[in-house]
Image 1 (cartoon, protein in one colour):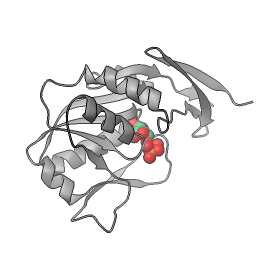
Image 2 (tube, rainbow, N blue to C red):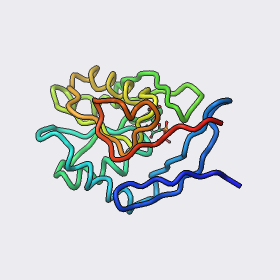
Image 3 (cartoon, protein in one colour):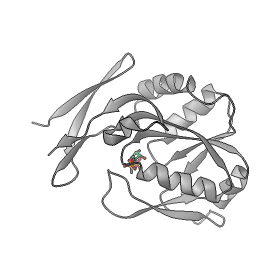
Image 4 (cartoon, rainbow, N blue to C red):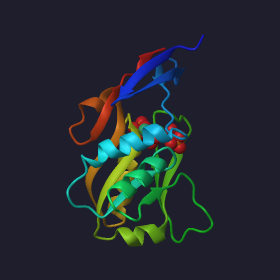
Length: 181
Ligand SMILES: O=P(O)(O)OC[C@H]1O[C@H](OP(=O)(O)OP(=O)(O)O)[C@H](O)[C@@H]1O
């Protein structure tokens, strides 16, 4: 039978399947997509921790997208920016950086459409994602945002996983351990 880990996020409880990701390590798989109740709760809770002044939320494809949308709505920010994992033909002069996340062994890239990069010039940005673990995704997002000429003024996630729980530079709602395999 699949092992699971129960996590409490405010008043909500979720049972996460524990999945191996390497010879030595397993993670509790947290998939925000489709969980409207948790997305709504997390956006309300994180909205209380955003800096007083900023211009845009920036999130990463894919699981951060519903959270950034709801956070933008509750904080009255009509637009946000999504960093993608692939270059699309409709993009204009996309900026790319390599990215390595704990969930994905294959090399990936993070992409900022040049149209969105133009919006970010000299703006204050809050990065939002569902989980921060190794910090690889966050570092790649920071690099793209700085390439665009914006300043990161806040970093939010629902969960901090593993060593990320000790990071003083992120705001999060709950901690997620890593597991031995
Ligand atoms: O701190 P890190 O080790 O970089 O891990 C965190 C990242 O991993 C997950 O995304 P994933 O790469 O699984 O992509 P997905 O949202 O498209 O499924 C999560 O949504 C974060 O973006």
